[in-house]
Image 1 (tube, one colour):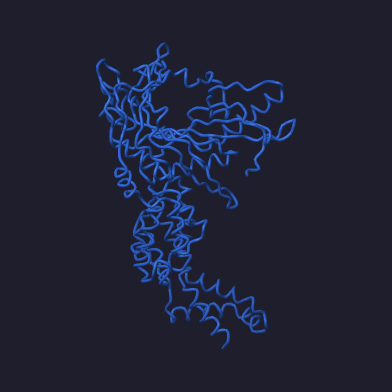
Image 2 (cartoon, one colour):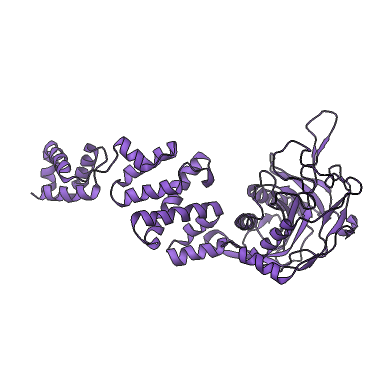
Length: 495
């Protein structure tokens, strides 16, 4: 149970959260027409006669969108309904040319499921899913193109959406943030949504209410179209605090739809919340029920990739990677794919089994590579270092060609140039020096220049050994093999 509470004048309040996530279905065409769905096109260049609601135009279901919804349901361990139906949700808005939205109200394509989330300090929680239904998106009103007019772009009109509705199981902003991240990860693994919240292909309606712990559910408000995990959490914090202050001030919460203002990090009222009867739902007469059999479902189940929870368990069980590292590496499909490619190549180049190189490779990816990419503001897909070059670098460090420090120097050059580490080492003369003749000469020179410290060392001040190592490394420009230096120094000082 979450210990997150809102502290009010009358005591502590519990926040109750449910999310409705709208995820744009990955498809080259819209839900009921063949118009393109590419992001960023010029306004009204991807609009069919169906999308524009021209008279006599009839919708035809896009089979790929159906498959994507079923794949998503399977990945979320949800009930797949082999019989579902499309309804008309009637309301007027300038960017809704039909005057209704084709959606699924009473009979969704996917029923109950669940999402498992990991919280701080190793805590876990299961968030229930109520349903996933398919629906078409509306267009977009543009109010900043002219001082006297508003314009409408219908490129999004008819784009396929999955509305993924959770149960009100979340009790803190942390839980809601973890839920959105995990849901986004699963959708991206499956390939049913690209999860790009900045472009609007995944956005959340956040339902928030407050109550005294143990009391019945309070009246909820819905915060519409929140487009980042950070804003989801901020909207919950503000909205919960607002509701507590109203109730403690003697007021009551009105069920309404609100907007989140990211510039002020606050919510504001948009309209009173409609009930289902306000939309006058009825079955769409132009679309027959959507019917498929169990064989269709099982064929799609067989196509599912290894999902993040299964991949994480495999990394820990079979590769000996820590729970934390495995969680970081499997959170995004691209990161997991990059790591697995690099790991396979590392094992080949070092002539070792995967289990012997996995732990060190995972530490390097998370500490060195991810740290550098974060500093550069890049994702793994934009990494200037390929899995092949990373594997080569680790092999050069592993076989002693590069010391740890030289390895970091080469890594920095790779980040800047994208070059092969072997090329960098060769062109810049960065190979680690293990030649005992050259190192004997360097050590002899260091000891001769520090005869007083040699006497102190032999007199019992053994802590000076580190000083001699440092001077030798400095004399060789950091290229000396530390292990060889240690062995030769011990022999020289013992003489």
